[in-house]
Image (tube, rainbow, N blue to C red; front, side):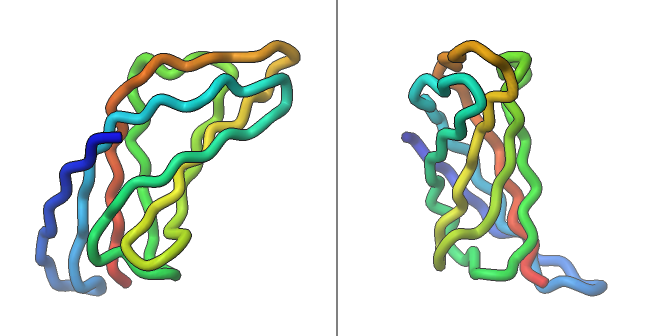
Amino acid sequence: MNSLYETINFGHGFDRVVKAKATLDFPSAGAAATQALTVAVPGAALGDAVVLAPPSTLNAGLIPSAFVSAANTVTIRVTNITAVAIDAASATWGVLVFKI
């Protein structure tokens, strides 16, 4: 996993946004299975809101989700909603963490 991050300071309802990019290579997801990987996002804290930017090449049948799972860490999950295994290619994912 390669990770890059940047902090953007705003006002108006939230303190800042932390953004990161990471190249992720999920293991093959079996039928109706979920796989998870983590991305280092310095400044992310439990309870922060996460917006995920999956790659445009994400396989049909994989549903992505993301959340702050620990300090400075975002977990990205892909859930296979099909009846066959899917092995997604390595790709770059974007993450925005909103400090609320």
